[in-house]
Length: 397
Ligand SMILES: [Mn+2]
Image (cartoon, rainbow, N blue to C red; front, side, top):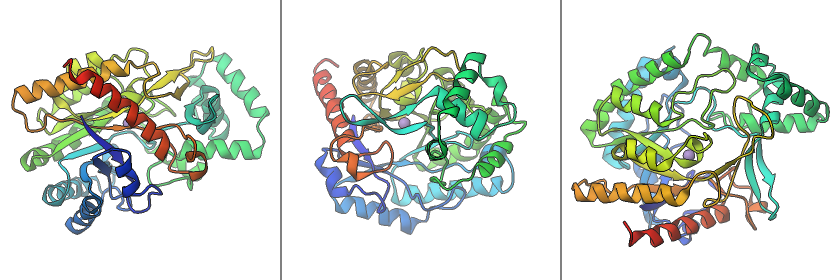
């Protein structure tokens, strides 16, 4: 597998020369300053590529070419956004990488309640605590209808947790959760979040899936013509949250989407971290069902921690890359076997790019305050462990 590293561009506190020291050979990057629905220009794509190549690395994956909320809800300028997406694809074909990751999560990108939860070893990890999330949803956001989504014992635990939180703790919880909102960082007010959620009134999973298939019908033929490979990232967490439908949470969701628009350009980002929060996730089975469509892999692990509540989402913590609920050795073996099948079939895209997706804050990371989940040393550790697994398996594939 091709070892890559996510770099947020010139604003990233981690530099390209530092990334090169991790042993990664490729970069995953995006033009984060261009808003969803706008066109990525050839000049800007070429400039990003030159910056990466000047550091002795290659730009292997775009993550993400974002899909606008207008396209997800089919409102406003969404048809113009299809045109802009196709134009960005044409420009990427001219000057950028061939693999393009996106997601179709309504409103929220990834969601955690704690971005730096202390670990016994002294590092920190990102965590999704179900009681904290219920405090946010029921009491701080006060979402209409939220109470029906939580069992009695969990609602009672949330009330008790809330009563022990001062204003600072409540504000910190809101910041942690809205940090997942695209392009928003921590500047969204709760009123803005409520209005965004309201744009999904009347959009259930079936309708949202229809919007995704419409989007793919608009952009996949162009991507195929250009020799590009789109790959959808799974929902994180892979459950309905805040009353919003989620449509890319399990292997069956992906099977429906790849069957709806059949093309080598309509593919999958296999994120073992997001998918692995579901107790039924089996990486070998996932690769068995979708292998030829997997264009990109995020290798990360989580550990579920139900805390005694049968809630809408299990509590979970981001664990060490090799030590969580997902059998990472099995995941890597399945992906390397898929690469071998592609080589035997003569596919030019036999090598699948992977990146260590998130890492703990360790050692100097604790002071460096990188983007949550994206520290230098924690990811370096993860990449080194994953590289060791790949090296160990190579002779057996
Ligand atoms: Mn991921």
